[in-house]
Image (cartoon, rainbow, N blue to C red; front, side, top):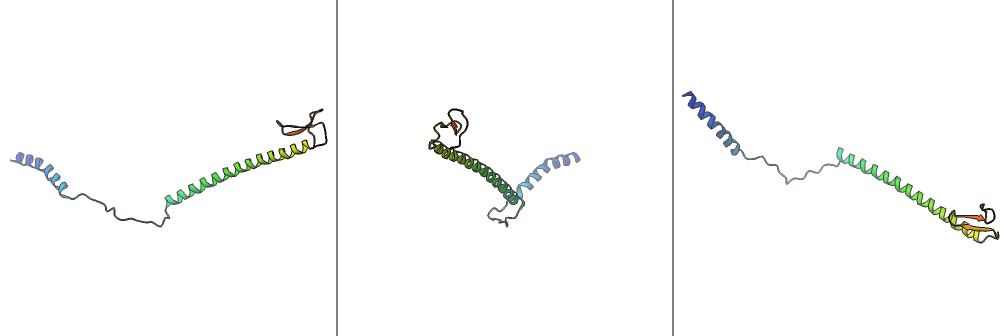
Length: 114
């Protein structure tokens, strides 16, 4: 008799557990609510810090590029003025060298002040 009870118990136990699991409704979360925080959390602070760091880096790089462009412009502008002065010079041996952007003396090859 005890073996029959053990068999029935072992057969009915899984069914009873399965029935208990199916009888309990599944847990669901409500998704119709929106939680708005004040915006002061660690993640937003870190994102703001990274954004500021990236902005500072790009600003520094833009400043370097602009300085370089301005330097090249000043160099070309100075060469243009020097060429005009060299061409208007009364020194007949002075000529403009476009490769070196200098006014040179034909006989010596040395730079001439126009």
